Image (cartoon, rainbow, N blue to C red; front, side, top):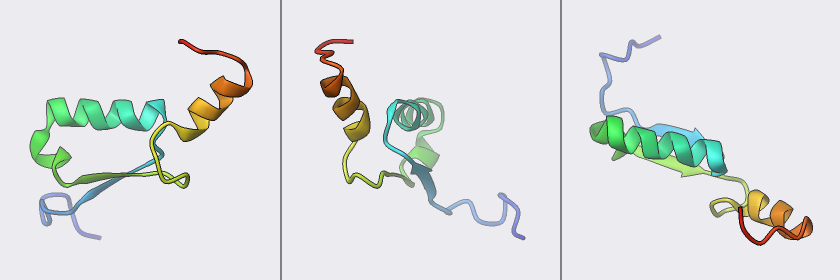
Length: 64
């Protein structure tokens, strides 16, 4: 197993584009922009906050 110091160019994959995944991406962008520029956010829906938006719509919530 390679240590983190051996491959600093390894990309980071954030799984899930819900509130938690996007909060992590934002924090990473602010705290470590050099790592954030190699990061990708993946979600099975294909877009950000899809499940969250669908759940709010079903519940009739227009504004958080």
